Amino acid sequence: MKAKIKLVTIFISLFVACAFAADWPQYLGPRRDSTSTEKGLLRSWPTEGLKVLWMVPVGIGYGGSVVSGGKVYLLDRDDQVGDNLRCLDLSSGKELWNFAYAAQGKFSHPGSRTTPTIDGNYVYTCGPLGDLYCMNTSTHKPVWNKSIWKDFGGGQLPVWAITQNPLIYGNLVIVAPQAPQTTVVAYDKLTGELKWKSPVLSGAVGYVSPSIVKIGGADHLVMMLAGKGFGRSASGGSVNGLDPLSGKVLWTYGNWQCAIPVPHAVDAGEDRVLITGGYSAGAAMIKVKKESDGTYGVTELFKTVDFGSHTQPPILYKNHFYSQYTINERSDGLVCMTMDGQIKWKTGDNPLFNKGGSILADDLMLSVDGNKMLYLIQPDPAGFKPLSSVEILESGENWAPLALTDGKLLIRDQKNLKCLKVTP
Image (cartoon, rainbow, N blue to C red; front, side, top):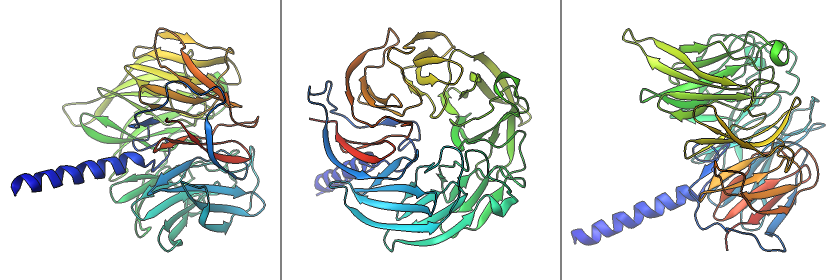
């Protein structure tokens, strides 16, 4: 009898693990690091290209999709009308329901900005005007909503509007308004009650979502602020570690200046944090250490302008970072860097990778070049190793993050969301 119970327990555990692995519940995946546990991906693609399982029209923009329980969620947008949370069937692409609200507004590079976050029966979205919604996926109705920009004294919107991918941490949903009265805030994820707000941190408004890194075995919430000015002349930016339960500032690194920061900080292991940006910012690796008096010290391990990222953070694989580093000032394409800042290779403009999204799965990288092409790449510090490629998107600024679940890759351009089969 005990043996049978043990087998049933193992089966249930495996089923739950598989169900979790099949979901892509938030920006950049389950761990918010562009990596997937999917196995069995095609190691090369058919000459006729990948099979398109379905395709649906979407509005212009850069927002990615998430998947939970066989359903796809996307925050779509029409600048003349407002935001529209759409729920689609993963198998067919059929729209199951949607929730739209008025949020008219124009800004540079119009359209959607962010990726929803799924947590249980709730989906969280943040629109470009700062409208934060908690939606019940069963009733298709809002549970609560806030204006993270206006509620904290925000005036004129930033040039590229509000760009926040909600972060769930325990019972909290955390976003960074970067408004005049606070930089980062946390709400009770079920009620919308404001649980804490951080002080105003040093720097100007940017486009970074908070991320979690491990420091001394504890979770730190890392938030970056923009430098004022442009390029190497920018000044006053900062990188900050906060207590995710209270918003207390634990440490600050001030030698980071990025005029338009977008990618969040990456946990590099062993209390190290990799910071990247565009506009000549490059990259910096810092190490955070808890001192005997309980405070934290920050050491800069290296800083380089030869590696960086404009829209999405680098992928870490076997102690090497891979990132698309084409910015206004340089076209380095896809770049590989070691843990100590040594550049191993770069593709330059042959082929050119320009702000596209990537996912690491099954020891492979699926990478959009930011324009028309999707690549299958073997990540290797010895050199750039493309295994297959296909022209799958319409030309344009195709910078949206990807989603991968159940052998299906969700990818979008400025007109359509497509579901591709990437397994046999």
